[in-house]
Length: 131
Length: 279
Image 1 (cartoon, rainbow over the protein chains, first blue to last red):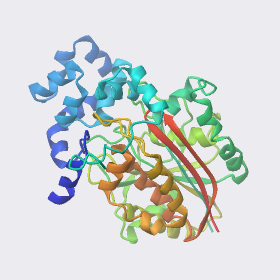
Image 2: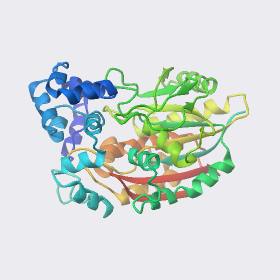
Image 3: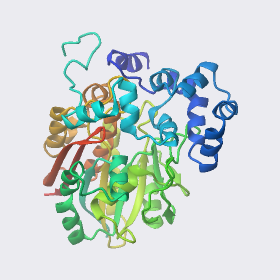
Image 4: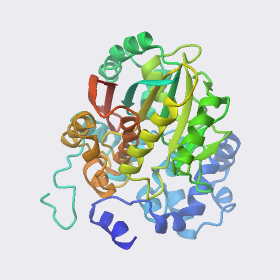
């Protein structure tokens, strides 16, 4: 399994949701899952800190949620499909979240996609950026 | 006897569902995408399938991290659209075909595929967006649907080869079902897209085009692509393409491409769509 999992680490800007990430992020992701229910979305919006206390997450994970720092949440075990439920609760689309994670405005991100998206060339390998 | 009459693949981008539900299909951004499905809507109205085995992935809607089945087959009478954080999509309840679903479950398990049997499950955009693209906005879906959910969220997902072979086992199961039914198998998700991290927005038209070509010309070779190549070439969510191989395995060795559509972008994603029939 080591070589299987390690092979993904050469891919830039990407966190693969493997066993390590899943264990790290279990409670963070289950918090996100709770936002599937309208009553929980309301409770979260009323007092985010108090709501997050219901889940045995790390202080870093809670802070990353409060900051809406999606790249940080990914590194702390969050999975994008779970994290998107925070975005939905805030009223944001996947495209809005993607713009946040790539550090551009939503308009800039949308324009990049309309122009054909981010090229694979130069984005395939950390070891060989020319690929 | 039941028989498989065709295979369909399509992306299942949630924003497509939102565009439909909010009446934006004529917007300049969305019009070319929906135009790409006009042929398919006419085609399927003529084909009139009785049942669609709809291969898709759940996006943390029915399955959280509490339970992560690799292959889960929906055997219920019906499946409600899931609330994905915005409220459920305003689309019809999906009617299942419990008898055929149980038959496929039994047959594939005895063929050594360890299916998870699901008797209660809400279905998210992964399942309902393909139905909307192919059937539009009817008051009720015009056929029964057997949801087949594949884990592509938690690594490792099943290999492409495993998916391809599951498709073959589904073909065998359908062929041994006594009732005269017209069955389609749909593979959904993809094509190239990445939703997460600094590399979000990756699109690889060259990879996608070869993938579309090889589904007809070289499915056995295509089934051998390792996971790392999907992620590297087609983005982290491009891994969904393994599900298309279940559709392909369910068709005959030789197939012909009836229709192809490819469009960039729908939100973050390259949309690919094929109709394949046995030759």
